[in-house]
Amino acid sequence: MSVAIIGCGWLGSALATHLLKESVNVVGTCQSDVSLQKLQGLGIRGIKLVLPFDNEPDEAVFEQLSADTWVISITPQLRKGKIDYPLKIEQLVTLAKQLKVKRIILVSSTAVLNGLTGDVNESAALDLSAPKVDVLAQAEQLVLGVDSTAMQTAVIRMSGLVGEDRHPGRFFKQTKQYTQGNAPVNLIHKVDAVGLLACLVSCNEVSGIYHGVSETNATKANFYQQSAKVLGQPEPAFDISDKEAGYKRIIGIDSTNRLGYQFEIPDLVQWIATSK
Image (cartoon, rainbow, N blue to C red):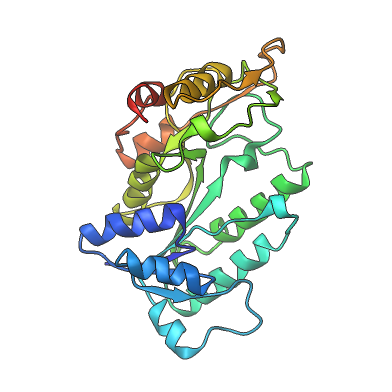
């Protein structure tokens, strides 16, 4: 088995390390020489691939990207005002077809669910009225719309990612009051994000949309205040006067059932209590 991780950053490099331990042939791409050195320092074979590209990659890069499975984990950079994410995905899908890749897994974001309320599962209809949602949805459909006889495709929407090196107790400024204190926490630990991706890489067949989210049952105010307290940090202030009706709880039970995956850290509240 061979896997190319397009966008081998914080999550991608963790996945690459996991797959290498399973004796999978892995290559990861990045966009800078500094990132390339980091990958090499982790023992990950890396190549430089700058997106979007004006011309197709040269033959040497082209050959190294030939793999059974592609995991596309590039950052949309919507907060920086960029809207070329669908173009990047379109170029990658075209390249994957040329290389006869057998499976594409797109790591998307639950930000595509913005505007929805209540319990939101994998089959929920999107609110495309928001430009950022529309950009993410376009990218997802470019992958999901590939002819299934040519390759298997899947999209996994990851919730907010946390981990020992991305501790939620450090997410907030102490001088600001935050809204939606009563909203549910929609997060996933890196170890389970990697676990779900590894399942998508190795299982016999994948298709459609998956959600990566823990089963944590806590409000944002309680969770983040406890996270800060564990680190000895001042607790962030939240407004808890707003009503719960407009909140969104992301559901991923169908995804874990389809993949037969069991979370290592299903409840992030328990993880927080023992983290530092």
